[in-house]
Image (cartoon, rainbow, N blue to C red):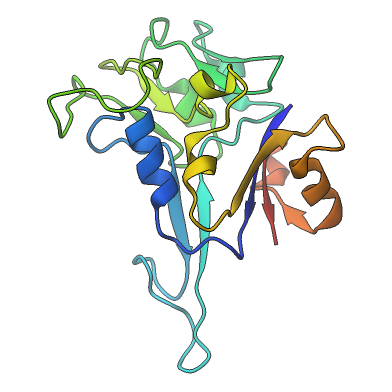
Length: 206
């Protein structure tokens, strides 16, 4: 199973991962597959908690959790959301998607999916990113694909590659010698909303 791990203490909230993802996958205006949540003293971005000199702020990068037991797959009436058994990546077939948004309702991780209400629009008049990135369509749900077009040829997601703080690790959790397996075995970690029973494959070192 392919897994993405984030060293939360290394994340500086620079949003490079989110921008790199948007470019690599030629995401439409207002669509983001990666989001950086701020754990600080306010709902506003980059507001620390505490008072000087004891201020602190933490960042939490989030995207589709590519769960072992994905709620979205169970509710999709047309099989547009499905799990790739070889990698564990939860994928989307945009040609099958009917825009019912049941996957969005079932997913406990708010904000990791987006819906194209209108025909996708772009800042530029030419395509960015990989030629194999998915085509974006009106009235379809979008989410992180773990850069499937890269992973299928033994690459890694663009967010992992682009992170300037080396906060992210990508690898095969079924291989005990992989960097991601060693990191999880040697450090305390957390997963988001484990009580939901979805068994997310994205890990956070704490």
